[in-house]
Amino acid sequence: MLPLTLENVRVFLHVLAATVWVGGQLVLAGLVPALRAAGPDVPRAAARAFNRVAWPAYAVLLATGVWNVLAEELDGAAQRTMEVKLVVVVLSGVAAYLHTRATTPRGRGIWGGVTALAALVALLLGVQLG
Image 1: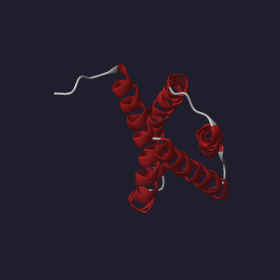
Image 2: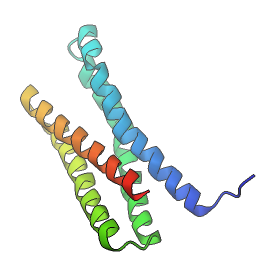
Image 3: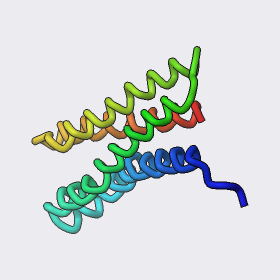
Image 4: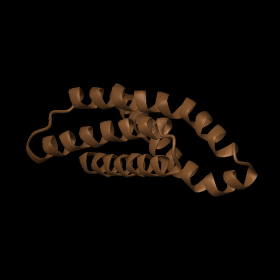
């Protein structure tokens, strides 16, 4: 059996947090029509429940992201890719926060879309860096 290293743990926690943050958004978005059919307050209740898991995952994502940057020596194109990734990760978090504060369906739609798109771009850039 291969030894379990601190690097394995670091990458595992980062991928796990990204799975919750990005995957959870996609799953919740896919469930919204069924949740609306169950009742007008059900989507909001589901979103609040998701936020109790999503925001801690985002915090782990940020912490392990910083850990990843400190552990890896990047230069040239990889460094620029990491810089862009950091911008879209922050954009995803800010947009998610604005989504939770939006008071209109249009605002929730716009900020939810920005959140998801930024999260997916960050995921793609992470794969490039991996």
